[in-house]
Figure 1 (cartoon, rainbow, N blue to C red):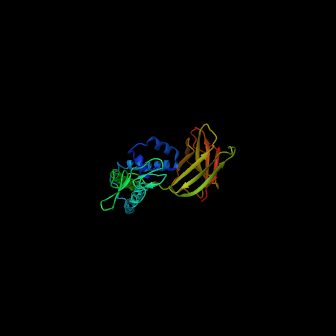
Figure 2 (figure 1 turned 135 degrees about the vertical axis):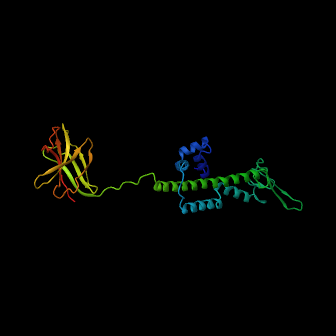
Figure 3 (figure 1 turned 180 degrees about the vertical axis):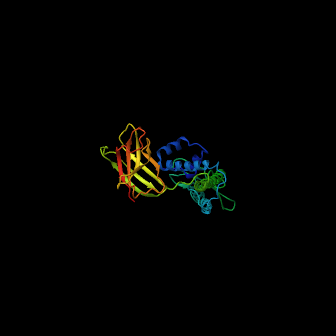
Length: 303
Protein backbone atom coordinates (compact mmCIF):
# COMPACT_ATOMS: atom_id res chain seq x y z
CA UNK A 1 0.00 0.00 0.00
CA UNK A 2 1.36 3.41 -1.01
CA UNK A 3 1.12 5.74 1.99
CA UNK A 4 0.56 9.49 1.75
CA UNK A 5 3.76 11.53 2.02
CA UNK A 6 4.50 13.19 5.36
CA UNK A 7 4.53 16.66 3.77
CA UNK A 8 1.02 16.12 2.42
CA UNK A 9 -0.25 14.98 5.83
CA UNK A 10 1.24 18.12 7.42
CA UNK A 11 -0.64 20.41 5.04
CA UNK A 12 -3.88 18.47 5.59
CA UNK A 13 -3.42 18.78 9.37
CA UNK A 14 -2.83 22.53 9.08
CA UNK A 15 -5.95 22.93 6.93
CA UNK A 16 -3.95 24.37 4.03
CA UNK A 17 -5.86 22.14 1.61
CA UNK A 18 -8.62 19.53 1.59
CA UNK A 19 -8.10 15.85 0.92
CA UNK A 20 -9.32 14.71 -2.49
CA UNK A 21 -11.54 11.65 -2.90
CA UNK A 22 -8.62 9.27 -3.30
CA UNK A 23 -6.83 10.65 -0.24
CA UNK A 24 -10.01 10.53 1.84
CA UNK A 25 -10.58 6.91 0.89
CA UNK A 26 -6.97 6.05 1.75
CA UNK A 27 -7.17 7.80 5.14
CA UNK A 28 -10.36 5.88 5.95
CA UNK A 29 -8.71 2.52 5.27
CA UNK A 30 -5.06 3.08 6.26
CA UNK A 31 -4.48 3.00 10.01
CA UNK A 32 -0.88 4.23 9.65
CA UNK A 33 -1.72 7.41 7.74
CA UNK A 34 -4.87 8.03 9.80
CA UNK A 35 -2.93 7.82 13.06
CA UNK A 36 -0.19 10.14 11.79
CA UNK A 37 -2.76 12.70 10.58
CA UNK A 38 -4.53 12.63 13.95
CA UNK A 39 -1.23 13.21 15.78
CA UNK A 40 -0.32 16.11 13.47
CA UNK A 41 -3.74 17.72 14.00
CA UNK A 42 -3.24 17.50 17.76
CA UNK A 43 0.13 19.24 17.44
CA UNK A 44 -1.38 21.91 15.19
CA UNK A 45 -4.17 22.42 17.72
CA UNK A 46 -1.64 22.98 20.49
CA UNK A 47 -0.01 25.64 18.36
CA UNK A 48 -3.35 27.43 17.89
CA UNK A 49 -4.15 27.26 21.60
CA UNK A 50 -0.90 29.00 22.54
CA UNK A 51 -1.35 32.00 20.22
CA UNK A 52 -3.08 34.06 22.91
CA UNK A 53 -0.47 33.44 25.61
CA UNK A 54 1.72 36.37 26.56
CA UNK A 55 4.86 36.90 28.62
CA UNK A 56 5.97 33.34 28.04
CA UNK A 57 9.25 32.11 29.52
CA UNK A 58 12.05 31.34 27.09
CA UNK A 59 12.01 27.72 25.90
CA UNK A 60 14.84 25.52 27.18
CA UNK A 61 18.01 25.62 25.09
CA UNK A 62 17.66 21.98 24.02
CA UNK A 63 14.37 22.85 22.25
CA UNK A 64 16.14 25.30 19.91
CA UNK A 65 19.00 22.85 19.37
CA UNK A 66 16.46 20.20 18.35
CA UNK A 67 14.76 22.61 15.92
CA UNK A 68 18.06 23.48 14.26
CA UNK A 69 19.08 19.83 14.02
CA UNK A 70 15.79 18.82 12.38
CA UNK A 71 15.96 21.64 9.84
CA UNK A 72 19.56 20.76 8.93
CA UNK A 73 18.56 17.11 8.52
CA UNK A 74 15.65 18.07 6.27
CA UNK A 75 17.91 20.19 4.08
CA UNK A 76 20.54 17.46 3.80
CA UNK A 77 18.30 14.46 3.11
CA UNK A 78 16.19 14.39 -0.04
CA UNK A 79 12.60 13.17 0.13
CA UNK A 80 11.77 9.85 -1.61
CA UNK A 81 9.99 11.73 -4.43
CA UNK A 82 12.95 14.02 -5.15
CA UNK A 83 15.37 11.11 -4.90
CA UNK A 84 13.41 9.29 -7.61
CA UNK A 85 13.46 12.40 -9.80
CA UNK A 86 17.21 12.84 -9.37
CA UNK A 87 17.83 9.17 -10.13
CA UNK A 88 15.74 9.44 -13.29
CA UNK A 89 17.61 12.57 -14.38
CA UNK A 90 20.99 10.87 -13.89
CA UNK A 91 19.89 7.96 -16.07
CA UNK A 92 18.90 10.30 -18.93
CA UNK A 93 22.35 10.28 -20.59
CA UNK A 94 23.38 9.52 -24.22
CA UNK A 95 23.74 5.84 -24.98
CA UNK A 96 21.00 4.72 -22.55
CA UNK A 97 17.31 4.10 -22.91
CA UNK A 98 15.33 7.35 -22.86
CA UNK A 99 14.18 8.67 -19.48
CA UNK A 100 10.50 8.62 -18.52
CA UNK A 101 9.52 5.94 -21.14
CA UNK A 102 8.78 2.26 -20.54
CA UNK A 103 9.64 -0.10 -23.41
CA UNK A 104 8.59 -3.69 -23.87
CA UNK A 105 10.77 -4.40 -26.86
CA UNK A 106 14.12 -3.15 -27.98
CA UNK A 107 15.38 0.41 -27.50
CA UNK A 108 16.91 1.98 -30.64
CA UNK A 109 18.64 5.28 -31.23
CA UNK A 110 16.06 7.76 -32.39
CA UNK A 111 12.94 5.99 -31.05
CA UNK A 112 11.76 3.24 -28.69
CA UNK A 113 9.62 0.54 -30.32
CA UNK A 114 7.54 -2.46 -29.26
CA UNK A 115 8.22 -4.31 -32.47
CA UNK A 116 4.89 -3.25 -33.95
CA UNK A 117 4.63 0.50 -33.49
CA UNK A 118 6.54 3.48 -32.23
CA UNK A 119 5.81 4.39 -28.59
CA UNK A 120 8.50 7.02 -27.90
CA UNK A 121 9.62 10.33 -29.34
CA UNK A 122 12.96 11.05 -27.67
CA UNK A 123 15.94 11.03 -30.05
CA UNK A 124 19.67 11.23 -29.87
CA UNK A 125 21.10 13.69 -32.37
CA UNK A 126 24.63 14.55 -33.41
CA UNK A 127 26.46 17.82 -33.06
CA UNK A 128 28.65 18.93 -35.91
CA UNK A 129 31.83 16.98 -35.61
CA UNK A 130 30.11 13.80 -34.40
CA UNK A 131 29.65 14.57 -30.72
CA UNK A 132 26.29 13.61 -29.21
CA UNK A 133 23.83 16.46 -29.13
CA UNK A 134 22.04 14.96 -26.14
CA UNK A 135 18.52 13.77 -25.57
CA UNK A 136 15.48 15.81 -26.39
CA UNK A 137 11.83 15.38 -25.42
CA UNK A 138 9.59 15.65 -22.36
CA UNK A 139 11.23 14.86 -19.02
CA UNK A 140 14.82 15.20 -20.39
CA UNK A 141 17.23 17.78 -18.98
CA UNK A 142 17.14 20.81 -21.23
CA UNK A 143 13.87 19.65 -22.83
CA UNK A 144 10.38 21.09 -22.38
CA UNK A 145 9.82 19.29 -19.03
CA UNK A 146 13.01 20.48 -17.34
CA UNK A 147 11.48 23.74 -16.08
CA UNK A 148 8.52 21.92 -14.55
CA UNK A 149 10.82 19.40 -12.87
CA UNK A 150 12.98 22.20 -11.46
CA UNK A 151 9.92 23.94 -10.06
CA UNK A 152 8.69 20.64 -8.60
CA UNK A 153 12.05 20.15 -6.86
CA UNK A 154 11.83 23.63 -5.40
CA UNK A 155 8.29 23.00 -4.16
CA UNK A 156 9.33 19.64 -2.67
CA UNK A 157 12.26 21.27 -0.88
CA UNK A 158 10.00 24.00 0.50
CA UNK A 159 7.34 21.52 1.63
CA UNK A 160 9.97 19.44 3.46
CA UNK A 161 11.36 22.50 5.15
CA UNK A 162 7.86 23.75 6.07
CA UNK A 163 6.79 20.37 7.43
CA UNK A 164 9.91 20.05 9.57
CA UNK A 165 9.64 23.64 10.77
CA UNK A 166 5.96 23.22 11.71
CA UNK A 167 6.70 20.04 13.65
CA UNK A 168 9.71 21.59 15.41
CA UNK A 169 7.90 24.82 16.31
CA UNK A 170 4.96 22.82 17.62
CA UNK A 171 7.38 20.85 19.82
CA UNK A 172 8.71 24.16 21.13
CA UNK A 173 5.16 25.29 21.85
CA UNK A 174 4.50 22.11 23.82
CA UNK A 175 7.63 22.76 25.87
CA UNK A 176 6.61 26.37 26.54
CA UNK A 177 3.06 25.41 27.49
CA UNK A 178 4.41 22.78 29.86
CA UNK A 179 6.68 25.40 31.44
CA UNK A 180 3.82 27.89 31.73
CA UNK A 181 1.58 25.30 33.37
CA UNK A 182 4.25 24.83 36.04
CA UNK A 183 5.29 28.46 36.51
CA UNK A 184 2.03 30.37 35.92
CA UNK A 185 1.55 32.44 39.09
CA UNK A 186 -2.26 32.68 38.97
CA UNK A 187 -2.70 28.95 39.53
CA UNK A 188 -2.41 27.99 43.23
CA UNK A 189 -0.10 25.17 44.17
CA UNK A 190 -1.86 21.96 45.21
CA UNK A 191 -2.50 21.75 48.93
CA UNK A 192 -0.44 18.97 50.54
CA UNK A 193 -2.38 16.22 52.29
CA UNK A 194 -2.06 16.58 56.10
CA UNK A 195 -0.26 13.81 57.92
CA UNK A 196 -2.39 11.24 59.76
CA UNK A 197 -1.56 11.00 63.47
CA UNK A 198 -4.02 8.24 64.41
CA UNK A 199 -6.80 6.23 62.80
CA UNK A 200 -9.61 3.84 63.70
CA UNK A 201 -11.84 1.52 61.69
CA UNK A 202 -15.47 1.96 62.73
CA UNK A 203 -17.68 -1.13 63.03
CA UNK A 204 -21.39 -1.60 63.67
CA UNK A 205 -22.23 -1.39 67.38
CA UNK A 206 -25.10 -3.01 69.27
CA UNK A 207 -28.14 -3.71 67.08
CA UNK A 208 -26.85 -1.68 64.15
CA UNK A 209 -26.89 -3.64 60.84
CA UNK A 210 -23.51 -5.23 60.21
CA UNK A 211 -23.24 -3.52 56.81
CA UNK A 212 -22.75 -0.18 58.55
CA UNK A 213 -19.10 0.80 58.73
CA UNK A 214 -16.66 3.67 58.53
CA UNK A 215 -13.25 4.96 59.48
CA UNK A 216 -11.85 7.89 61.44
CA UNK A 217 -8.51 9.64 60.95
CA UNK A 218 -6.90 12.26 63.19
CA UNK A 219 -5.04 14.75 61.01
CA UNK A 220 -1.99 16.80 61.92
CA UNK A 221 -4.08 19.90 61.12
CA UNK A 222 -6.11 19.28 64.30
CA UNK A 223 -9.16 17.80 62.58
CA UNK A 224 -10.95 14.47 62.56
CA UNK A 225 -11.81 13.12 59.11
CA UNK A 226 -14.76 10.76 59.29
CA UNK A 227 -16.07 8.49 56.54
CA UNK A 228 -19.21 6.39 57.07
CA UNK A 229 -21.29 4.05 54.92
CA UNK A 230 -24.63 2.21 55.19
CA UNK A 231 -25.80 3.96 58.37
CA UNK A 232 -29.45 3.17 59.16
CA UNK A 233 -31.97 5.96 58.71
CA UNK A 234 -32.91 7.73 61.93
CA UNK A 235 -35.64 10.30 62.68
CA UNK A 236 -33.09 12.68 64.17
CA UNK A 237 -29.42 13.15 63.31
CA UNK A 238 -25.97 11.59 63.76
CA UNK A 239 -23.52 12.92 66.33
CA UNK A 240 -19.80 12.14 66.77
CA UNK A 241 -18.20 11.65 70.19
CA UNK A 242 -14.81 10.97 71.75
CA UNK A 243 -15.05 8.58 74.72
CA UNK A 244 -12.62 7.70 77.51
CA UNK A 245 -13.04 3.90 77.81
CA UNK A 246 -11.64 3.89 81.34
CA UNK A 247 -14.35 6.02 82.98
CA UNK A 248 -16.75 6.39 79.99
CA UNK A 249 -16.50 10.16 80.06
CA UNK A 250 -17.24 11.66 76.64
CA UNK A 251 -17.72 14.88 74.75
CA UNK A 252 -19.22 15.73 71.37
CA UNK A 253 -17.04 17.04 68.54
CA UNK A 254 -19.78 17.64 65.97
CA UNK A 255 -22.62 16.23 63.88
CA UNK A 256 -22.84 14.48 60.53
CA UNK A 257 -24.83 15.95 57.69
CA UNK A 258 -26.19 14.13 54.70
CA UNK A 259 -22.75 13.37 53.27
CA UNK A 260 -20.75 10.24 53.91
CA UNK A 261 -17.62 12.30 54.75
CA UNK A 262 -17.11 14.95 57.41
CA UNK A 263 -14.16 17.00 58.63
CA UNK A 264 -14.64 17.99 62.26
CA UNK A 265 -12.36 20.25 64.37
CA UNK A 266 -10.86 18.74 67.49
CA UNK A 267 -10.50 20.69 70.75
CA UNK A 268 -6.99 22.10 71.30
CA UNK A 269 -4.71 19.88 73.38
CA UNK A 270 -7.20 17.00 73.38
CA UNK A 271 -5.77 13.88 75.04
CA UNK A 272 -6.35 11.22 72.38
CA UNK A 273 -4.56 8.60 74.46
CA UNK A 274 -7.31 8.90 77.05
CA UNK A 275 -10.24 9.75 74.74
CA UNK A 276 -9.38 7.09 72.23
CA UNK A 277 -12.83 5.75 71.25
CA UNK A 278 -14.69 7.35 68.33
CA UNK A 279 -18.46 6.92 68.60
CA UNK A 280 -21.27 7.78 66.14
CA UNK A 281 -24.68 7.95 67.76
CA UNK A 282 -28.31 8.46 66.68
CA UNK A 283 -29.74 11.54 68.41
CA UNK A 284 -33.23 13.05 68.69
CA UNK A 285 -34.24 16.70 68.32
CA UNK A 286 -35.07 16.94 72.04
CA UNK A 287 -32.72 19.73 73.23
CA UNK A 288 -30.82 17.12 75.25
CA UNK A 289 -27.07 17.55 74.81
CA UNK A 290 -26.19 14.26 76.48
CA UNK A 291 -25.45 11.04 74.58
CA UNK A 292 -28.68 9.23 73.69
CA UNK A 293 -27.18 5.83 74.48
CA UNK A 294 -27.93 4.64 70.92
CA UNK A 295 -24.47 4.10 69.42
CA UNK A 296 -24.32 3.06 65.77
CA UNK A 297 -20.56 2.85 65.09
CA UNK A 298 -17.51 2.61 67.32
CA UNK A 299 -13.77 2.26 66.89
CA UNK A 300 -10.54 2.76 68.87
CA UNK A 301 -7.85 5.16 67.66
CA UNK A 302 -4.34 3.80 67.27
CA UNK A 303 -1.14 5.35 65.98
